[in-house]
Image 1: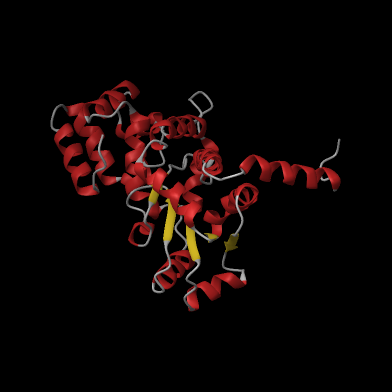
Image 2: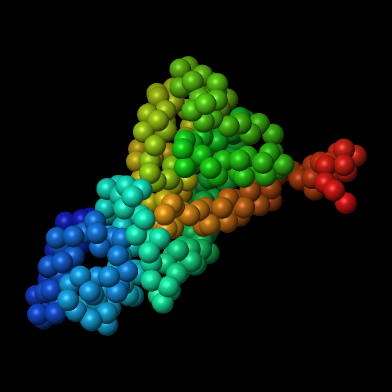
Length: 282
C-alpha cells in the first residue's frame, strides 16, 4: 500500500469502523490511542478493544494490509517520533507465545532489498561514491554506529574515505568553510539527531554534494540529500535494529568495487601487506 499521511489513515480507520460494531470498537480504540497501538501486539490490541484477535486481523485486512504486523508498521512510521526509550520496554514483556516481532520485522525488511537494489537512487549512489575524490561518511548518535563498518570495508576498495562525527575535527571544518573536493554520505536514522540535521544544513550552505541513506521517504534528510536511498530499520525492540542497512552497505561496497579499475590488484596488494604484517592469526 502506498505511503499515506496520518489524516488519510485516520479517515480510512473511521470508514472501516462504520462497517460493523466489532470494527467500531477496534477503530475507536486505535484512533484514540495511536501511540499506544504502535507498540502493541495483535493480542494486546484485541484485549484493549474488547474483541478477538481474529477480528483485529480481519480489520487490518479490510484496510488493505496483509495483517496486523503490516498495519502497525504504518502506524509506527507515522508516530514513532513520539516514542521515548521507556515506551519501548513494552518489548521486554512481549508474549513468548507470539512470533518474535524483531526477527519478523527484520525478515520483512531484508526481503525489500532485492527490489530496492534495482532502483535508480541506488545506482545514483554508486556513481556518487565513485566520482567523489574525498568521501566523508557522516552521522551522529545511533546513526553513526554503522559508519565503522562502512568505512572499514569501503576503504579497502577506494582511497579518500573519511569520517565526520560530532567528536571529530572534520565535523567543524566541513561545516565552517567550503571544501570543493568533498562529498558527504550521511547516515540518517531515527531518532534523528538534531546535531546531525543542523550539521547537514550547515554543510549544504557550501554547496557540498550530499547523499544519504535513511529509513523512509519522509526523512528530514530529504531536503539536503540527492540521491536519497531509503533502507528500512527494524523498530520492534528496545532499540532500533540495522540488519537491512548493514546488508545494503555490503551490497553497495560490492557494486562500487565492481566499477573500480584494477580492484583485484588492489585487494591482492592489501592481502600481501597484511600477510607480511601477520595481521591475522593463522
